[in-house]
Image (cartoon, rainbow, N blue to C red; front, side):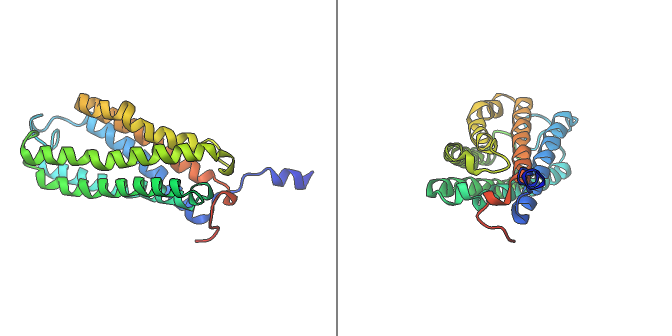
Length: 221
């Protein structure tokens, strides 16, 4: 009976994947806090400014925090490549790599956007930056949708978190419905949409923490 009981206990993910899961969980929760903070932030400048609703100093601080937060999410996305169900499929590997590149580009863009601190919302430079954001976001969306489809077909391999493949698919689909609509609808809708996306990323981090070492391709750091 003791042997049977021990065989049913879910072991934590291997150390590398678990650490990445902790970072991703923390990054997702931080993203929710950031979205809520922007919604509650006093309107210190006109809506016609790219840095709305913040003063220059707070805008730069916010952009730096966004970049740091994206790096935390990136750890979770990269960790997916250590999972056997992903690593053993060329399609899934390429898709997750594309999503990781998307998160990395998004990180860089958050830093580049600082140069537009004094631009009008619809200036040529601001429009260029706003358009540029669509590239990494689409990479993340398409990459996670494709990886999600592959993962769902192999969900029995995700030992300890067999629901995680459905979450990957949801993370990708969310980019197209409702995130894309929310970002273009209004400032408030955009923050709510991003906050919801971050909840899904936080859940991804939790799932990585829960994965059994048997689901990963490498059981060492």
